[in-house]
Length: 84
Image 1 (tube, rainbow, N blue to C red):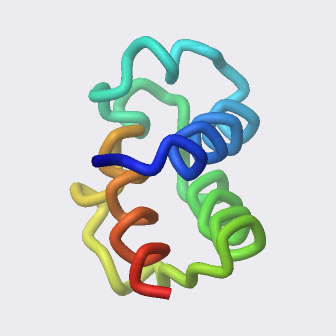
Image 2: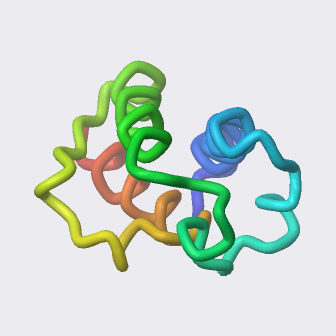
């Protein structure tokens, strides 16, 4: 079962970086294709994840396809956060 606090905190972080609340309703859209994330925003997101959750995800550690939607990003954070 998903940790709701991680999920909510991630939604807040992604919404802030993407500057669009559509991410809460359209959680499976490709954020890059939709123009909501670019490479600089993706780095900002990784820095935010590390700061918020003390979880480091190196840009080279995951493929873009593994972190291109809200649900995939939340999943990647959860599997690393639960391991801490």
